[in-house]
Structures are given as C-alpha cells and as structure tokens.
Image 1: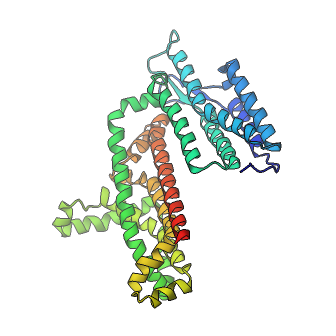
Image 2: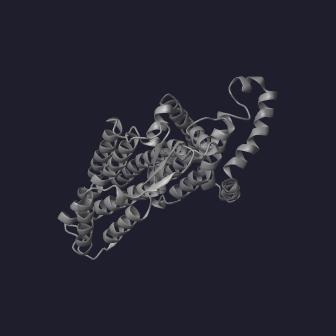
Image 3: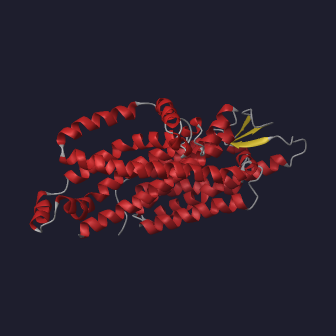
Length: 391
C-alpha cells in the first residue's frame, strides 16, 4: 500500500531540531578524571566533510518527504537515520581515541558523552520511527531494521574502537559485576510480576463479580500508588523484620526487613492497580450474548471465566500486565537502597560518588530492559487480539 500523500512536516521539523542539537549542544566532554564535568567538545570541531554531507542529504530528504512522501524519499530518510545512529557512536569513539593518544594526555583522562549525543540518538530514532510509520512497515521489517542498527552499535563496541570512551572504561572495570546484577534485577522483576499476576487476576475478578468489593478495593490500590517507593520500602522494613524474628523459619527462608522480600512485596503492591483495572475492564467488555451462550452450553461460572471471558479479555489484561512489568523494571532500581541488589546498585554508587558515567552504566541496561519488556508485551498483545478476533 502506498504511503499517504498528505502534507506531514514532522520529518523536516525533526531534522531541523537534530541539526540544532548536534551543532548547538556539547557532543562530548573531556575531563582529567571521572569526577569532574570537563570541557565541552562540539560537533563543529569534530566532523569531516562526509558527515556534513550526510546531514545535508538527510535534511533535504526529510524536507522533500514532508511535502511529497513517496516511498523513495521516506526510505532515504529511514536509511540515513538508521546509519547515523551507529555513526554518532563511531564519531565519538574516533575522537576519544585521538584524544587518548595525543601527547601529554593523562592516563586518568575521560571522554564522556554530552547532551548532543544522547538527544541526537533520540531524534534519529524518532526520524526512523516516523518514516517507518509512514511507510507502513510490518513488525518483521521494524524488527529487521532494529536488529541491523543494534548490530552496527555492537560492532563498534566490540571492535575495540570505543575502548577509550569513559562509559566503556567504566564497564570494563565492572564487567564481572554487571551480568550478576542484571540477573538479580530480572529476578526481582519476575518474582514481583508473578505475584502481581496471581493476586491481580483474583482481585480483578472479585471486583467484577462484586461491585461493592470493587468500589472498596480501587481506592485502596490508588492510595498505595501515591506512596513514594522509598517510603513504601521503609514501611515494610519494620513489620518484615518483626515477622522474621517471631517466626525463625521465615527468616531462614530469606524473609527480612531488607533484601529481596520487601522489594518484591512493594513492587507487587505497585503493580496491582493497573492489572486489577485491566482485568475489570476486560471482563466488563465481554458481551452479554457471549455469556448467555456459555450458560446455554452448560458451562459453570468458573468454566465460562476460563474458556470464554478470560480469552476474550486477554488483550486488555495483557495491557495491564505490560504496564506493571515496565514499571517494575524501573522501580526495582530503587530496591537497591534496601539491599535487594540489581542494577540500582551501580546507579546509586555512581550518584553517591558523583560519577556520571557510572550512573549511566546502571541506567542504560534498565532502559534497555524496559524497552525489551515493552516490545515483548506488544507482540503478545497483538497475538492475543488476532486470536480474539478470529474466535
């Protein structure tokens, strides 16, 4: 199907903003050590003629595609945007290498990413996403493009070209710790999500069959959402410590005021509201004729719930699970403050030592994990909708 022919100046706006960001904000920062911000380095002092040409071609293609969105011009914008994402990393790595090998450079010197680098990546991703949307790309095509971009980034990081970047140096110093912390982070999220699904499905069903329970339950879950995460962790520490002291078996099982238990309980409580609401909304949207048909077939209320209502409500229910899962990925970082571990340990170590790149070493995997979880649930929701429509 041909892309739409109506005017859409979004691509031009994004390309203009991208140029302003790249040439108006610091692209890198050079510092004598990891604890100071250092001096700003701008793209204008780094780029070669080929980079200028590529940006000019991107701007021209985006301008034409905004007024004449043919497949050729949209594909040009998409290709250049996708190529520039690893291109920015290569540009930063090349400058870091040149700085590291320059005479008189101290061994503790660091080259860190500046605001123009991060905003440039975001704007390039928006450009590519907008072009994909106007091209009406299939999920397979989107996945293939994303894989190519990630492969380009991985090739640059794995080739050793980027070893002199400060963020890569931080990773090299903690390479043995990052993987276990990532596994611990995933463990916290999975445990919390499992309990959230178990309790959320039951509470959502109860709110559906008993309106009074629903009216009493939702305000309580809303109040839990208003409690800051650190405060909720603190509120759980005392009763869990007392419980572990009163019942030694629970203490031996790992239940205590700090560590994994309060983190999982808190994340479970935070995830209940979106899941209960989605279960309630999903069950309420099941039509009366479908329920009448289940009754006519002789199904018990439980059988009707399992075989009729939940399958039809599954896309909406998965939307609530998706919200709870993505939120848990982020909130699990705060659990490091109560000894639960995870990637938050790296994040807070960087904050307490005023090391920006160490903070990023904790933040970037969390962001990547959240995006991965979101993408997986998008696929699951799409499959559930297709199955619900076909049944």
